[in-house]
Each structure stands twice: as structure tokens, then as C-alpha cells.
Image (cartoon, rainbow, N blue to C red; front, side, top):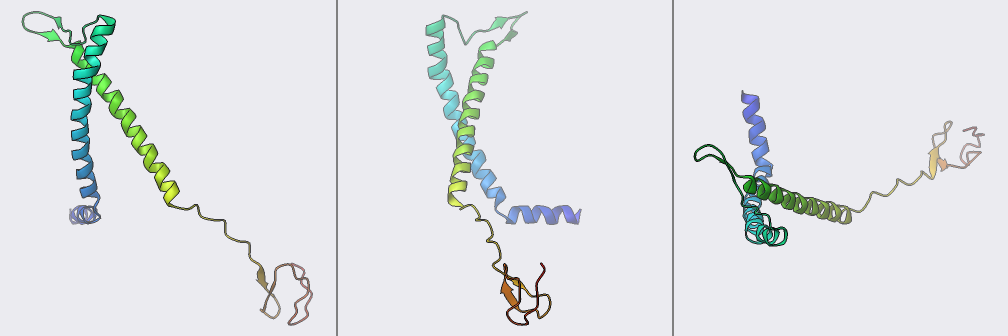
Length: 137
């Protein structure tokens, strides 16, 4: 149990919780905007164009009904939110690749160590200039 609390303390101290909280708050506010867009603009336009009633309900026995209009609105909300999140993630990934330069390939070594005298010599040397040994490598 102590290990669990230690891991939780490390998680909180990293700042991830604050980032998560800000994301949830912004997501909730944005969700309200998307819901308003769907309910007040998109659904009335669909009603006018197609003649269908998005706010429709199928009445069952008594006061029970199936609210298929709310379901269609929820699907539209989801698609809009998913598209916006996709665009945001794509933009952030692009910004991250622009912000971080790609690691350049490590340059090939230009020197090597002579196996006989342990001096530093050119990679393409066939004879050591220090000990005059023939290099077979």
C-alpha cells in the first residue's frame, strides 16, 4: 500500500495532474460550445433541408418514449469533438517535430586506435605512423 501512495505522490509531483485538470476543464467548456452548435444551428438546418425532425421521439406505452433526436445530436457532437481533437493532436505533433530538430546521424569516426602501439591514427591508414606496424584491419 505504501508503494501505491509513493507512486501516486510521484504522479502528482510531476505536474501531470494539473495538465489533466486543465484539459478536462477546457474539454467541458468546448463540449458545451459543440452541443450548442449542434442543437441551435446544425439540427434546425437539417430540419429545414431534409424535412425530418431531429428532435423527434417515438412514444411508447404511457409517458415512455425513445428520444432518437437526442441520440442523433449526441452522434453529431461526438463526430465534431473527435474531428477537432484529431486536428489538435495533429497540430501538436507537427509542432513537436518542428520544435525538435531531428537528430543528425552520428558522424563516422575519422580515427581509430592502433592495435599495436595504441596511438590514434586515421581510419583509412594501412601503416601506423607511430610504430610503423602494418595494419590489416
